[in-house]
Length: 294
Image (tube, rainbow, N blue to C red; front, side, top):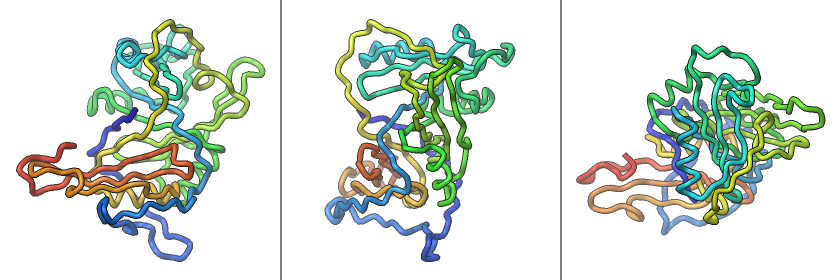
């Protein structure tokens, strides 16, 4: 299963110098699939295990999760809404084996903000603005890491724009364990969400109530890659590789995947174990029609 995250919002990118004093920006260049030589330098700046989840922001979480669960054969495994004491947003989590999607929508601003918000950093006004711009779209690409605090500190020290500082999410029951969550800017209005577990064994995150579902599963196993479409491919690639240490896994240019009508350039970034793949695309110009990603 591959997913596309919203793009074409110009990123704010500030690059930090490397240890040798050479700016990390503009170190990559496109060579095309035929000239690309794959090499895994095991260069991650912090330990990354896998995709943890994708968080879709939407206007109607209840209806949207049902559509995805029915269409993709996924089961409801957790929720956080008014019935669980969350009066800030409604969030429903569906899963098929290693594929986990959360669908999150803000409640009305007139709803009294009492009870427990499962994600303290969630901002209703920001969510409404995001939904107004993108509709249903991926807000957060969640990846499972050894230490979400270290991942945030290392990423921001290497040029990442911090969004959510590390915070401990704990079950409000004794012995429930905890999760550390942090976020940095990825591209456009998408964040890279670091998740690490500390004795937490629930289906999603603390203070999401486990749910049982009888939905038939179709056999989706895992998320293979998550794609982002951007204006300037090399700028974003330099930014992401600088903050994460990810290496280039594959590359394609218009001559590889284009036609006389349209084209694109693409670089695929990967973590050490190559379980997290992040293709980043940009449109090419000068063809009869717009790029297929515009």
